[in-house]
Image 1 (cartoon, rainbow, N blue to C red):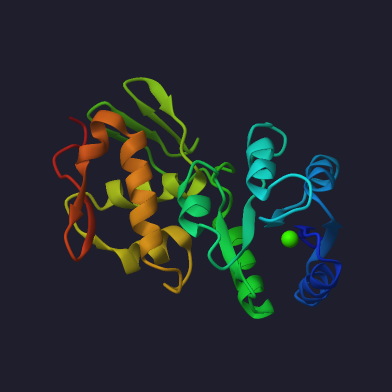
Image 2: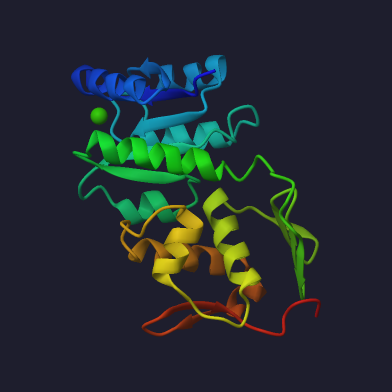
Amino acid sequence: MALTVLIVEDEADFSAIVALNLTRAGFATIVAKNGEAGIEAAHARHPDLILLDLMLPDVQGTEVVRRLKADASTRSIPIIMATARGEEIDRIVGFELGVDDYVVKPFSMREMVLRINAVLRRGSGLAPTGDEPSYTSGPLFIDGPAHRVFLDGREVELTALEFRLLVALVVNRGRVLTREVLLERVWGMQADIETRTVDTMTKRLRDKLGTMGRFVETVRGVGYRFAEGQRDA
Ligand code: CA
């Protein structure tokens, strides 16, 4: 059965081109012309992925994300945000939103399909594969199979990408991971996203980890490292 992509886009010409290209790439598509219709379609049709325009006539794309993530039945659907250049990309990607990736308009259809496939391949992070190990590091507990993180017994709400970033760092604790390596391992694709994206997300992860945040060390000019000796402390 073909995977379904929900396209939330108010420009009809553009959504038609996107739908055509996704159909050619083997996907089934649904088009919603505004934010409310998009939210409705997400609930009714349960797409495998949502390609969401940031600038919509009724509800902002960011608000659509917030509402989908607040609802258990739509929370795990991966979202790729489509933005125009200069629309505060850091805020979209690094912030609390839980967007899995973004594309900057005008994007090539080939790039769009590549990114959709990359996101679908790595999964939403909320669909456990069952083969992820768990880790304990001081007050930090990473429940691998459940994709959940606890600090002093309290759950830390991480986005799918933040979870992957944390696991990548903890698995390689004591070793520096470059931004390029993190992009490849965490974002699941070749490093053609700006490396600044890694910095933004690492900062958010550090903030969310509270007292454990300091164990995510910046190695100036190289990348990031999870402090060694923190496992099973
Ligand atoms: Ca638009």
